[in-house]
Length: 311
Image 1 (cartoon, helix red, strand yellow):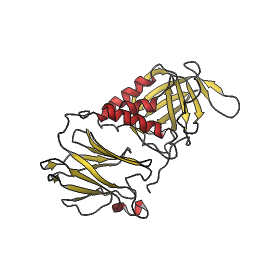
Image 2: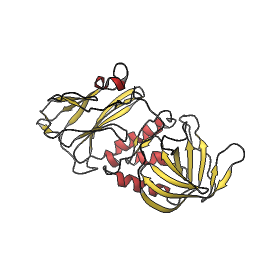
Image 3: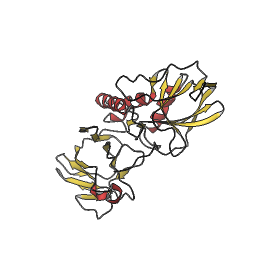
Image 4: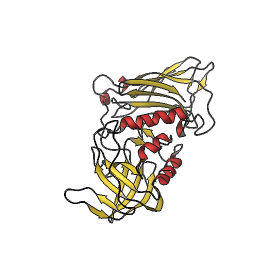
């Protein structure tokens, strides 16, 4: 099994979005349930109630910087804090829709009263606060997913709202919102590609047996398909595989992409990941992207279900 920590993706330097003023309440997350309604009402704008043992304290809060689509820097009572929105992942800098995700987060926070809600973990390995973020009562994590500018991502143990975020992603896919639009990142491809198999739990320790997990990709079209420039990824911020130049699939042909190293051939490729697996045993999504970055097909598993879809 691929281990998970409270880390939600490495921090990046970001662009400044000064002048945003918000109210922030730090609260422990309630147990996950369909009736979860979020944290209590926020105090007046420009103030923050910080949950602590004994009487809460009140301090001025400003949103200093929108770092990227899922990270914001706040100043709370004179102390600067980076906050990572949990349960989601937005495109990395330089990837399709990264700038749009950052802009959308800015819009969602600008001039609104903000509430922060903790799940299980307090901080990640980078020292960032891990929180669900509400703006005037709206769950910002969910809003980003529903706009198609973030994907739902289960980061154990902070999964109290994972089902809610998964449902938001299903709505975004059905609506063709954001990254789920066929031409989100450029002209839509006419290629027919499908994921026909995904083995995510290798025998034994996944990290020691990387070639025990793989994904199989099939050209379902009527002609040969040049896959140079195409990409396979999961829901993390770092797992990306780019097909090599000159690699193509004949009509009806398939290739197995294994996580570990090996000798590539016409029907077998190797990610060559070192020291860790790619596919999360608790649930994940495999994406196949065309050279423009459009989502062409996906394969999702976890939560007792497996689902494939074409972009």
